[in-house]
Amino acid sequence: MTFRTRLLVVFAGTIVAAVAMIVWIVSVSTARVFEQLDAERTAALVQQFQKEFVLRGEEIAGAAQRIADSDAALRVAIDVNRAEPDYSLHVNDATALASSHGLDFLELVAGDGSIVSSAQWPRALRIKKPGSLSRWTGNRSPHFSSVRICPTMPHWRSKPCASAQWATPGSM
Image (tube, rainbow, N blue to C red):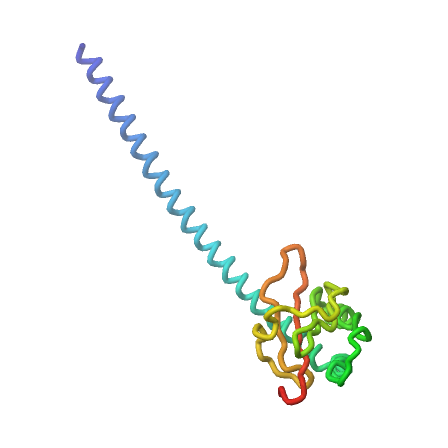
């Protein structure tokens, strides 16, 4: 091998090694920058989601409280707490209350856990919800012993849900 050939191989090897090292450094640096940007975007998205979740929760709680304080809810609560209540009179009350307060899901539940009226399930009259009394949040209102905000909602719905449990004499 001649001196020229050896010199060419050394220079070519040096150039290839330098280019490979530069490419590797640029790739690693770019990956770090993209990971950092992705982490920042993710953190901003999570923060925005949490903020919107809290705001939406407050909005739902306000709607549930307005329903609990309404005259229609008072009439239903009085009728439900009679000696022999007729739940069929109130089968559509949850639908009307839910639509007037911007909710897709609303259940009016008697003190024993049976559904008085349901906006999303109109045929649920007198069905008892297993364990429903143990899941109430304990928010107080004049007509209800508690108001429950549903923790999850289906992704295809844009509106929230709420439930209320009627106060029984002596439960307040």
